[in-house]
Length: 357
Image: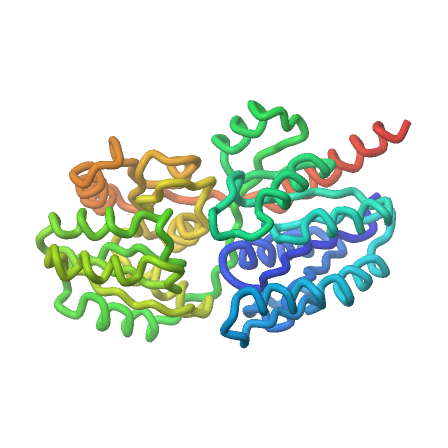
């Protein structure tokens, strides 16, 4: 029997955090003892979820290397010893996302003889992720069970020799939509009543915002919006908007979960023209809110999308946006999702017990 599930999500923000707390809420409703270990300044979470704010991020420092060094030092000195004391051999430790100290986290769980489950969320390493390769290798090689969120990822990992891998739903916590926030977003992004195509979330080069802008430049009667924290390409995107004359608004800042939910709800179509992806929490949120989505052929995006473009060209994405609007939203069936996680935890414990014999 599983005594407790420790969900370790070190960031405290964004899609991985929202997935983690939704899993925790579902497992709690099933009667399991669950705790989420996360950042001390984490985003809000649903009421039933028990949060252990044991990770201290040094977000105030303007220097990335200083932030990383201080955060890692506190993690090693405080968070890992705390986890060592909290974990029991009868527990499941489920690591969500990739963190530079993922190998050390797994080592602590191993020393406590707990069952280790990992959900990397991305089965590739972004170029700006320090220690990402080391973290991904450990997450795939050292866990009793690896959980992914698309059939494409599962096939990819099996081809890479990862045998203990299973697919589970990409659950995302979405608080109730605030109608006033939705109205504000519509007034800011499409005050003239035009149809609104949205590229939301972190603004990164691998999310291909320039393709989005070029597609919107060929959609008369539409407006576009790129909204989220700028992680690099913001200036190039703004320059392209000016050069093409596309009716695209850009807003670069971090959004609270309430703001983000209202933003997605305000859109007519959510667009994901990514160059590389495993799956997308943005698409899961859109499906849950009943907003249609248009994507390009990439990773597991097609598995949640309303319409998949025929290729990654501007005309193909342009046509996919209008087709998604006409098709309407694709329902997301989340019934029994928490039970899938409980089942995989049980399988992981059984495999671990067999390995010990």
